[in-house]
Amino acid sequence: MAVIPSSAQAAYDRASAPRKLAAPRIAASLDALPLTTLEDPDRGPLEAVEARGLNATGADFTELEVSGSRFSNCLFQACSFTGALFVDIAFEGCDFSNSTFDSAAFTRCTFKDCKFAGASFTEALWEHVVVEGCTFAYGAFNRCRWKVIRACTCDFSSADMSEMELRAITLDDDRFTGTSFFRTKLTGLDLTSCQLKGIVVSDTMGEVFGAKLSLYQAAALARRLGIIIEE
Image 1: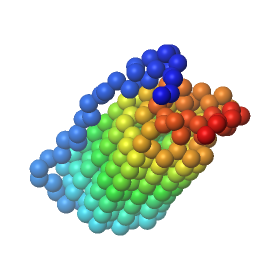
Image 2: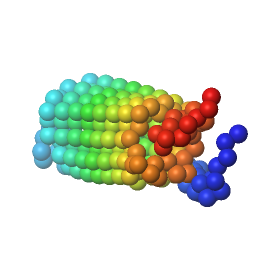
Image 3: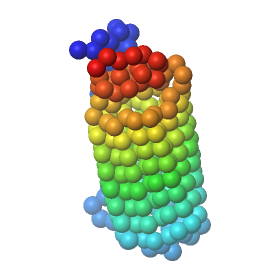
Image 4: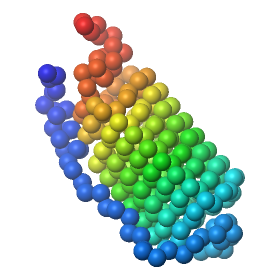
């Protein structure tokens, strides 16, 4: 049994206190959203709409505002959603690879089987968000704020998750291979079900203070400190 310093255990207990996730509030009846309306710079806020199979590459959706809506099987590669506001949205089977969501905000949103490879979320806000079966490989999350988040079977390989603010985060079978957590406090995170390999942290490894790791994960980090592990 691993011995955890009392201060680290206390920090973990405080930070891992359960928080109830709020689900998206989406109307039962939604209006179809055509691409022409979405691309119109004078569109104004969109509410209670449903986007299916839309296809746009390199489009500018800066400061888009959408609430109470659904997006399914849409392709938005290399698009700009800088400063966008998404409230009560369900995304399913969408591809946002290489798109930009810098300074965007997501509140009460769900993502299922979506692709965000190479996408940028710098200084974005996620609050009450569930992501399942999504890929964020090579994504940029630096200085992003996550509050009450659940991520299940997602891939964050080679993502930049430095200087993030994390609160009430639940992880389940997620992949963090070559992921940078530089200056991101992982206190309160249970990483035991996740894949950790070659993660980037500071020399002192202060980022992992108060995080829960398996013996194998802890041993791998200990070796980086020059500790000899007897097997």
